[in-house]
Amino acid sequence: MTLLGQYRGNPRDDLGWLNTAGRPSVFHRANLPRVGLDDVAALTSGVMTLAALWLNDGDTVTNLSVISGATAAATPTNYWAALYSPTGALMAQSADQTSTAWSADTVKTLALATPQKVTRSGVYYVGVMVAAGTVPTLVGSSGARPVLTGEGNLSQTSGSSLTATAPATIASPAFKRQVPLVIAS
Image 1 (cartoon, rainbow, N blue to C red):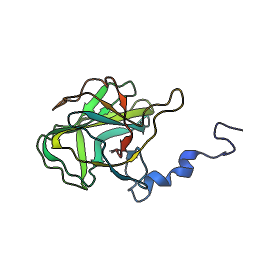
Image 2: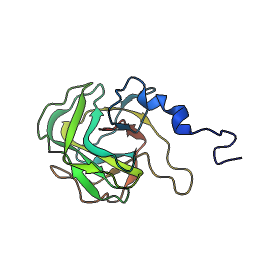
Image 3: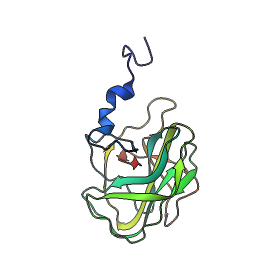
Image 4: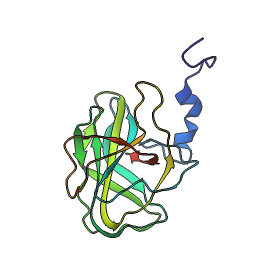
């Protein structure tokens, strides 16, 4: 018997359709499949929400995308996306979008200031921060708290009173049940 029980195949091959159905064959990595998603309250104004995302050695990440749900951002003052390493160090951030409108049910693709070439496969973190009178809901899912020793959070929060700049490190991460869909391309 193997770590996967009686299953002898490659689970990534067997479940690959979940992440690629209907998506183009250009480079992208997503943390969730496109099925079973809902409108989740993943954001709190001025607090960064981070979603775990597997990246492979050799991937080059240029853009980070998230999708607003049924609630649009009202009176945003700052919002951005950032990519963090497996150790929690900031790799790159998008430009601050300041008061640019973000409507409901809208994909936001934010370019990183510098494309990032991944040199080690592993779990990276995509951070999204919105400071606004009303933050948008995001398309995503609900996740469980880690159960086994060594499991990481699928989603977590970090920081408070954040504005235009992503923190240099993920400080005091706290479990978050709502997991936003994030796509690296």
